[in-house]
Image 1 (cartoon, rainbow, N blue to C red):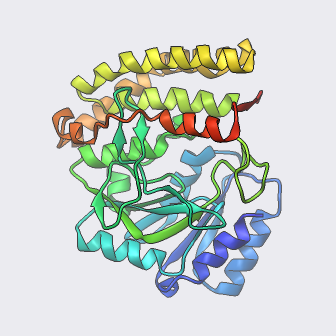
Image 2 (cartoon, rainbow, N blue to C red):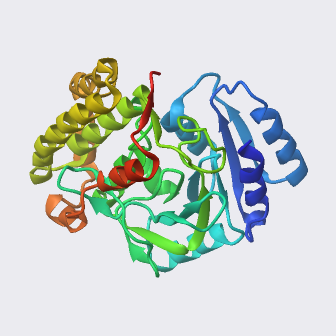
Length: 331
């Protein structure tokens, strides 16, 4: 249900004649490929459909798309998002004007103008990404949103693209952190507006509107593991110490979730397994630390500018207050 509006919003862009569209398909079982191929034929846009043959998740699929793209910039756009007509033009113009390497558009709810995010403004004392209020002008920000990540293609490939091993979740934080420490700059462009459903797969009830707080064992596993990996890979020295409060927070959160869900299997699958998996991936961490050291131009003291006092989990606390305790699917 999402793809037609997403593609239609691309066709309506003010700079449509100058863009290339690459759609990557993770061996979907629906009619997505046929919809895309019909749209390509009708719109006559430059681009192609890349069929991966299996589910490569967010990271692998986006890497495959980026590998065949030829543009100066890449926009990684989720299918449950659509762009206002001048979004790409404003993203491109502002990013070029201020000499940035990546940008975050203003992300709004799918059906209206309620604010979701303007990217990630920084990280808290637990090393977790945290948001902030909507920006009123083009300003520096810590990370682009994963649903609509805009980055210079040369930089994307230089810093190693998305690590396919982490599959998905926290991938945009990892990539953005590397962009900064490689000497780049990321800005929020609030004039470029994207509408996004969010969590459409794990929280589908309500269709275009979020009406409950729902997650799954696998989503929490990937989120918990990848947040820890991101910190261990990108922290230079002092910021590595944030791994200690990070692990303590995971322990406290696991206890809270055990009380709320009364399901030990969720704690085992989403928390204990996540920490154990991060430990098992220590060779992945060491390999990436070596790769990052070769292009690192900024250290932890520079990155301290993104340290925020407001805890990241405050957002989830507000969701629990609005929708009630989270519902967790065992998958």
